[in-house]
Amino acid sequence: MENILLVQGANMSFLGRREAHLYGTTTAAELDAMLLAHAKANAYRLEIFYTHVEGEAIERLYRAADEGVQGLVMNPAGFNYAGYALRDCVRALPFPYVEVHITNVAKRGIHSVLAEAAVGAVFGFGVHSYVLGLEAMLKLLRG
Image (tube, rainbow, N blue to C red):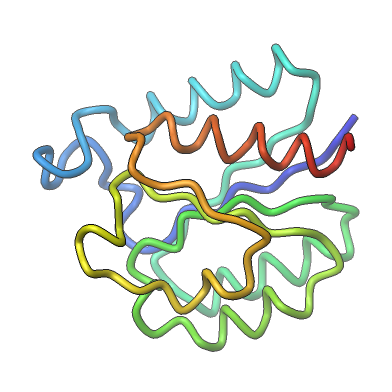
């Protein structure tokens, strides 16, 4: 069974309560339930980790490498702009990284400094971007 870590970056725990015109009304808890159901239906292990602190994300990722995590899916969110230390951490990981975003970040003029460390990115499909990102990761892991 594949072991995937989903990291939700700065501001994502407030999902459903902030800027609904951009991010929709799905709450973080509703998104978590949807993704955990996807994991169960597709027979993989999913851990979801939220943080507003870049250093905490780095610490969790290095621990994931020691725990046998096989893939990272992440919405860096507020870390997009200046998350260079997080990007360097991701580059050092022994497993692939898929980046996801709810909105079309390119259309919004947002450049993610972490995207260059990703195998690929999914953005612009609302919360379904997460499902697509997890399915892409499963494809990578299962061949």
